[in-house]
Image (cartoon, rainbow, N blue to C red; front, side, top):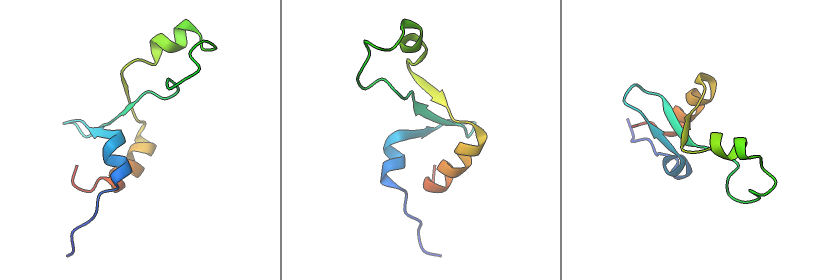
Length: 65
């Protein structure tokens, strides 16, 4: 079998936990913070885990993760 290539965009954006879940940075915080509520900014800190349906797609992009 030939080796599978990892999607280079996916390896920069996602991290796989030891239990197999996918961690991703929170979206929507690059610019325009003035119009966002304080609650949104607070809740968008750190990382989030992807839902099972999206994690299935991402795991195909990261064959050796």
